[in-house]
Image 1: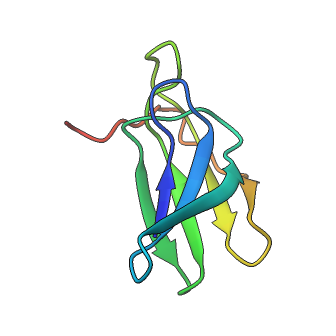
Image 2: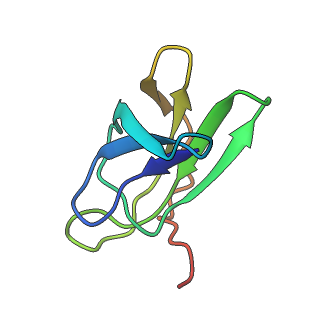
Length: 86
């Protein structure tokens, strides 16, 4: 299970529910909180929107690749920042 972000955080961690252990999954490219995430192609995790460290809506998205533990920018922008309703 991938756990990402938080206020002013780029940190990402992987949680293994079978052992109860967490380990680093690297850092996202952008600090995000209140963002959305979902699995695509049964492999990658798309992380989109949210708010940055100033509270402004984040435009764009990034993808986490679990095989390399790296985040990659998605070349897609809506022109509108997105925030998951709380």
